[in-house]
Image (tube, rainbow, N blue to C red; front, side, top):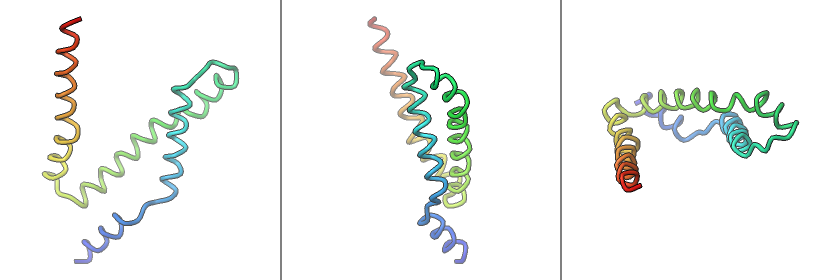
Length: 102
Protein backbone atom coordinates (compact mmCIF):
# COMPACT_ATOMS: atom_id res chain seq x y z
CA UNK A 1 0.00 0.00 0.00
CA UNK A 2 2.81 2.40 0.88
CA UNK A 3 4.54 1.82 -2.48
CA UNK A 4 1.30 2.61 -4.32
CA UNK A 5 0.89 5.88 -2.39
CA UNK A 6 4.49 6.86 -3.11
CA UNK A 7 4.05 6.15 -6.81
CA UNK A 8 0.85 8.18 -6.91
CA UNK A 9 2.62 11.13 -5.28
CA UNK A 10 5.55 10.82 -7.71
CA UNK A 11 3.12 10.73 -10.61
CA UNK A 12 1.23 13.80 -9.40
CA UNK A 13 4.33 15.93 -8.80
CA UNK A 14 6.32 17.43 -11.61
CA UNK A 15 9.87 18.51 -11.05
CA UNK A 16 10.08 22.20 -11.92
CA UNK A 17 13.87 22.10 -12.37
CA UNK A 18 13.56 19.33 -14.95
CA UNK A 19 10.86 21.27 -16.77
CA UNK A 20 12.95 24.47 -16.85
CA UNK A 21 16.01 22.62 -18.17
CA UNK A 22 13.84 20.83 -20.74
CA UNK A 23 12.37 24.15 -21.88
CA UNK A 24 15.88 25.58 -22.31
CA UNK A 25 16.89 22.46 -24.23
CA UNK A 26 13.85 22.82 -26.50
CA UNK A 27 14.82 26.43 -27.20
CA UNK A 28 18.35 25.28 -28.06
CA UNK A 29 16.98 22.65 -30.47
CA UNK A 30 14.77 25.25 -32.15
CA UNK A 31 17.72 27.67 -32.33
CA UNK A 32 19.89 24.90 -33.78
CA UNK A 33 17.35 24.18 -36.52
CA UNK A 34 16.95 27.90 -37.31
CA UNK A 35 20.72 28.41 -37.62
CA UNK A 36 21.40 31.32 -39.96
CA UNK A 37 25.20 31.43 -40.01
CA UNK A 38 26.15 34.65 -38.23
CA UNK A 39 29.40 34.87 -36.22
CA UNK A 40 27.57 34.80 -32.87
CA UNK A 41 25.62 31.70 -33.85
CA UNK A 42 28.79 29.93 -34.99
CA UNK A 43 30.03 30.19 -31.40
CA UNK A 44 26.68 29.80 -29.66
CA UNK A 45 25.41 26.70 -31.44
CA UNK A 46 28.37 24.34 -30.87
CA UNK A 47 29.35 25.86 -27.52
CA UNK A 48 26.04 26.10 -25.74
CA UNK A 49 23.40 24.07 -27.56
CA UNK A 50 25.35 20.85 -27.80
CA UNK A 51 23.96 19.58 -24.47
CA UNK A 52 20.28 19.64 -25.46
CA UNK A 53 19.99 16.31 -27.30
CA UNK A 54 21.99 14.35 -24.69
CA UNK A 55 19.71 15.92 -22.06
CA UNK A 56 16.65 14.49 -23.81
CA UNK A 57 18.28 11.04 -23.98
CA UNK A 58 19.07 11.22 -20.26
CA UNK A 59 15.58 12.44 -19.41
CA UNK A 60 13.91 9.72 -21.45
CA UNK A 61 15.90 7.11 -19.54
CA UNK A 62 14.89 8.58 -16.19
CA UNK A 63 11.24 8.78 -17.18
CA UNK A 64 11.33 5.29 -18.68
CA UNK A 65 12.58 3.93 -15.37
CA UNK A 66 9.79 5.76 -13.53
CA UNK A 67 7.25 4.32 -15.99
CA UNK A 68 8.67 0.84 -15.48
CA UNK A 69 8.28 1.24 -11.73
CA UNK A 70 4.66 2.39 -11.98
CA UNK A 71 3.55 -0.05 -14.69
CA UNK A 72 4.62 -3.60 -15.39
CA UNK A 73 7.02 -4.62 -18.16
CA UNK A 74 4.23 -6.10 -20.24
CA UNK A 75 2.16 -2.93 -20.11
CA UNK A 76 5.16 -0.77 -21.01
CA UNK A 77 6.09 -2.98 -23.96
CA UNK A 78 2.48 -3.06 -25.20
CA UNK A 79 2.26 0.71 -24.87
CA UNK A 80 5.52 1.25 -26.79
CA UNK A 81 4.46 -1.14 -29.56
CA UNK A 82 1.18 0.70 -29.87
CA UNK A 83 2.64 4.22 -29.75
CA UNK A 84 5.94 3.69 -31.63
CA UNK A 85 6.11 0.48 -33.66
CA UNK A 86 2.68 0.60 -35.31
CA UNK A 87 3.03 4.24 -36.51
CA UNK A 88 6.59 3.48 -37.68
CA UNK A 89 5.44 0.51 -39.76
CA UNK A 90 2.49 2.51 -41.10
CA UNK A 91 4.67 5.46 -42.20
CA UNK A 92 7.24 3.11 -43.74
CA UNK A 93 4.47 1.50 -45.77
CA UNK A 94 3.12 4.89 -46.85
CA UNK A 95 6.64 6.02 -47.80
CA UNK A 96 7.26 2.84 -49.76
CA UNK A 97 4.01 3.28 -51.70
CA UNK A 98 4.67 6.95 -52.41
CA UNK A 99 8.28 6.42 -53.51
CA UNK A 100 7.32 3.54 -55.78
CA UNK A 101 5.30 5.96 -57.93
CA UNK A 102 8.10 8.49 -58.28
